[in-house]
Structures are given as structure tokens and as C-alpha cells.
Length: 331
Length: 306
Ligand SMILES: Nc1ncnc2c1ncn2[C@@H]1O[C@H](COP(=O)(O)OP(=O)(O)O)[C@@H](O)[C@H]1O
Ligand SMILES: [Mg+2]
Image (cartoon, rainbow over all chains, first blue to last red; front, side, top):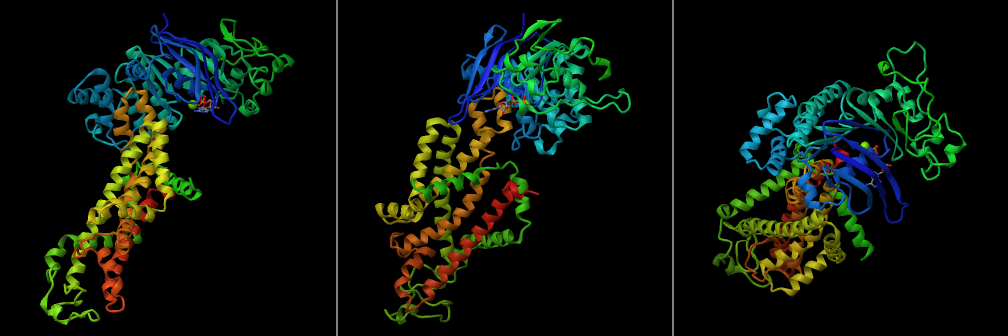
């Protein structure tokens, strides 16, 4: 049975005086225990809103959430605020994008770890401190005992992201959501953090939802990949299938716009033309149509459904032909 | 609500933005500027004087001296004479000693008026910022009303309603600060509420109470501390203004600069220095607190961060 089952999740932002904005629409996916699932898409495609909705962290006023999110037989969307607080941090952990601002600047790192241990694992301050030092050691912080009494500003971005990972995993959640955890970091640090994350989740058998705009990260990490565009999932496939032959023109374009080391000299990179601001409404047709090389009349007039096709889920009228794909090895 | 008070409210709200986490850093930057150092020196000297003045005052400030009384007539107040550096006041007391000891009473009024204003303001602003929703709406309308009355008029009304005592002055002046501190703390807390680290703490299931007291409040008090420094200056001036209007302390004997200034107003033609010295003292001290507060605010402003 799935650990997390997201069915038809929708998020509409409504504010007085503005048109309602659908940020997430009909998103369904599931996560098996211990599995790593990718959520990929460019900035503004609704990845963060999806993750915040799962965690119950969207503002109560102004965001209308529909659908269902089942976590181990519990419907999360209808839980009371108090019930949610008991589960967050204990069953579901989250790591955010910006490690520089995600720690409280005025209290010590130690207190920020122990407060979670005391809260969810019923430890005394003393026990929690011992555990906290162990956690910091596990995420690779040298001299963890001393770190406990230091403040966030005394640490680099990479170190702070390690601390945040330690905090998120402190109560051994069954599911960790990482929302672009490396976007704010230097490239070399990115690789370290990613390998730390993947080591930790496989050691502890934690399921992971990896949110990123970077297909390269997904390639190294995820079992299953959901590609989002304009608030909807447009392609879902096992990692291998996706990189072997991406079928959605958007996924295909993403893969082609990654520079490859073994590409023949002089072969131009082919970025996806246009930007999200060119999107049309999903109700009208395919949101990606204005930017799509394969678009035909039907794409402008009829919204495509998410359908099983070629061992994957695909939302496209004119998918990329089979022979025409980028191979995984090329990445 | 008047346009003026809306503008006041907006200005206060905008001051609250920018957070304060870098308070230490900001303090370090503050004291690189000569203006801040001047402010600190003035405030420092004032506080030291307030503490030691009872011990260094050459004469007892609270009893008349026969030497002075002997020459005192309604149209002649003795000037400097041996042992009495600035001569007599209108009651035959040693003016110089009273001026020194006045530092203590003036600091007392300023500090308590500010502290009470901060305390009440922080309770209102803290509740509004922590709960939001209708609590916030009700409390903020309340501060709007307080802000819509010109500040001195507010203090005058309160002072007029209560019996004339030192605590009346303190409370009346404190009320001027209440809506300012309330809005300031509320604004800072609302900024904190949508901050990344509060979201992160919420995602960890940290309790509401802990989030408010450990994560939001400590990161929100920077602007309040700055404003409190500035308010010390205006509180001292406002207290003096109340005394000047005859709404101050009814104990005319008390050596407090505002009161001394207020009681000297009919004697301007007889002995102007009786008004001049307390006035100068008030202005210099107020300037000190203002310089200090403004430099702190500048270095807390994210726009000025280097
Ligand atoms: N609180 C909010 N109110 C209104 N619109 C929002 C809010 N949060 C996000 N959005 C909008 O929802 C869309 C998806 O945002 P997001 O999920 O953050 O994208 P990303 O995939 O980059 O994480 C964006 O267009 C964004 O402007
Ligand atoms: Mg995002």
C-alpha cells in the first residue's frame, strides 16, 4: 500500500479584487514507503504549492484546496490544526530551499534541534542534546558538540542545509519533502548535500519527494519522476523510461536544453522557446501549446488528458516520436 | 479615521519591516558613526548624573536656605553667591543643586513613561501579531483611534482627568507611545509570520506558543528597542509640556526639569535662568536620545546594510 496517496489535488488562490488563480490542478501521484519520487518543472509550475498543500502549510484564508491526500490511511486535508501539528515533523519532514533564512537567527542550532526532539519524541532537554549532537554528526558536521551552542550565522549555507536536514530527520519521519534543497548552494556543495540526502533516506528507509527544476538532480536520485507544467502533471515515468525516451515535448525540451559533455562539437543547445508567461489556460487547450514545437490545432482547442501511454502517464496530443529521444547515459 | 493618522500608522508599519535578526551586527555598525557616539556620550553622562547627583549636589535641593531667603522678594531672586553657584530659585532653594538632582527625576519620568508605553504597546501588538484575524482588526482599530488624536492632546486629556501627580504625568505620556509600539511590534511579527524560519518551524510541528515566543517575538523586538530610545526623548519633552501647561506634578517642590521649567514661566522677567537651564538640559538630553535612536534605526534598516 502506498505511504502517501495524492488524488486530484487542486489549489486555487483567491484574493479579493483579483481573478482566482489555479496554481495546482488535478495533481495525483503516490509514494511507496522508502521510495524517492521526483517533482520536476520550471519555476512557477506549482511544485512548492503542491508540497505546502501536502503539509497543510498553505494560508487558511485565500487558498482553496481540493482533492485528497492520504498518508497511511489518514486523510491529511481534513485534519485539525492541532492534529496536523502533531504529525508534522514526526511523520512528515520538510527541507526548504533557502538554508540561510530557514533557521531562526536568534537561537542556537542546538535549541532548534532539541525543541523538535522534545516535542515529538518526548525527550528531556539533556537526552535531546545528546541525540542532537549525534544527528549533527550523522549529517557530517565536524565537532557537533560545539555546534550545538553556535548560532546559524556562524555557518555557511551548506552547513546550515546539513543542520536543516538533521532537524527534518530528527524524528525519523516516514516521508521527507525536499523543496529545491540545493538551489541556493554552490555546485560542489550541491553534490555533497544530494549524496548526503540520498544516503540518509536509503539508510533510514525514508520516502523522499524531491522537488527540483533540475533534471540532472532527478537523474541521480529518483525512482519515479513527475513532470509538472502550469500546475498539472504532464508526464510521469520511471526514471529510466523518462531519460531513455521522454515523450512529452516539454520534458523532451528540458532534456535537450541540458548541456551534454559528449555532444558533438558545435551542436547547438536547444532551449525551450518562450516562457511560462506565454501559457494559455488549461481549460482552453494545452498550456504548453504556445511554446511547443509539436503543437497543432487540437492543442489550442482541446485540453489533453493524463493518459497511460507507452508504460507511463502522458498528457499530450502530439507526443515526441519514439525514435527521437535523448539517452540517459548522455547526461 | 483621518488621513493624518492613516499616514502615521503606515509610517510606523513600514518601520517594522525588515526584521531584526541582525541586531548584534547592527549595533556594531551603529557605533561606527560619530553621531551615534555623540548620542551615546550625552545619554551616558545624563544617566551617570542621574545616579550620582544626590551625592554630589553641594546643597540639599529640598529645603530653603536662610541666606537666599533673606534677599528673596517677588521682584528679585538672588543670583550666584558664594556656596550657591546659580543662586536661588523662587522659593529660596539652591538652584544649582536642584538642577543636578533634576536629572534623576527627569530620567525617572522618561524611563517609566517609556517602559509603560512599551509594555502595554507590546501586549496589544503582540496579541494582534500572534493571533491575526479579528483580534488584530479590533486592536488595530483601537490604536488607529489613539493615533488619530494628536499625541500631546491625548496626554493632556488623560492628565486632565487624573489628579495631578508624578504618576499621572508618567501614565499620560506613556499612552502616547502605546499605539506606536503596538503597531511596530505587530508589523514586525506579521513580517515574521511569513518568514522562512517560522514556516520551517511550523513544518516541524512546533507548538504555536513556542513559535510565537521563541521564533517570532525575539526576532521582532529590534524596531521596538529603537523606537523606545527615540520615545525617551519625546517622553521627557512631553512631560515638560504637561508641567508647562499646569497639568503636571502638583508637588511643586520636586526637582524635575519639566516641572522646574513649568514653574519658572511667570518668572521669565525676574530671573530667566530659572527657565533657561532646565530647558537647555531637556533639549540636550532629548537630542542625545534622538541621535542614538536614529543611528540605531539607520543601521537596522536593511537598505543601509553593508
Ligand atoms: N500564497 C500565494 N498566493 C497567490 N499565488 C501564489 C501563492 N503562492 C504561490 N502562488 C503562485 O502559484 C504558482 C506556483 O508557485 P510555486 O508552487 O511556488 O512554483 P514553483 O514550481 O516554482 O515552486 C506561481 O505562479 C505563484 O505565483
Ligand atoms: Mg518553489
